[in-house]
Image: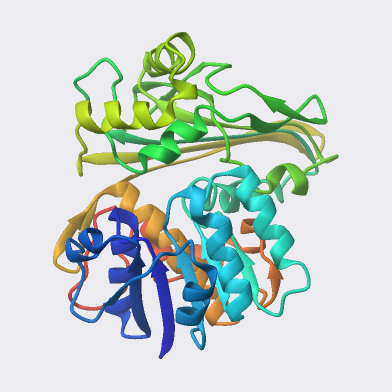
Length: 371
């Protein structure tokens, strides 16, 4: 049984811990800096816990010593510290970060490492990159790769058209930081909350706009091979304008702690959410200009004894599948591992990746999830 440490006792960290522990193949310990967070943790009885200041590299490295892997579900600001501890302890490392600077630091740590470092293993970046890469391989030449993902409330009733479904810090960060892209064949940084477009999925109209971090390493992978590559977040119409008011007009992008407090005080969380995935690839096949589209909607369901939201399930499934595939020898065992290194068929065939294949995860008789 492989010993795994999950950093972060929040909504996603608890889902990861349950998913792994319920298989019976992983011995899971959840670590958090706060005793209150650990005390409030809702997971199966098999999961162990520990309270440690994860910013203390030596203390965390000591805990990681002898473990198989560490999975970070902590805020993006802690990514580098956790990756450094993983490097010191010589364990495999996986995370969910969308932060571009943090990922670059993880990549530097991975250089020459005897262990695997695989960041950005969630939904976007994560699964969305696996899908886009698989689709793009079928084209002779590539014109455009467009990735769109939304984690949305099913029943919005406020001016933002939004409920808190995942990390507030992450949501603010992606709307503030520059966005990587390929524009007219050249690498570029484009501003967040811009280039608003309308898309329709199954008769529902959404807007999509630039946000940071969703492309993972695709700009590097497809540099010189595609004319246009971009990632945009899906929201209900009007959300981008409201976020511009908060972040730009009221200058709350410079007071992110205050904005986080406002959002978490005024905007309720919800478990009644839906994940909308929309990927298009345009290019030439046999001399013809072709566009192919991949869409998927995923809803929440039960993991163990608890109902988990769609964003909890999809995010946790991504990093659990990455760990599982690495443990099975499907993925590289050392150095920097990209999401593009995962074959879509292998991911969807994995017991955790089945969440994305419209099937419940095959984790045992006590586990069900609606997709």
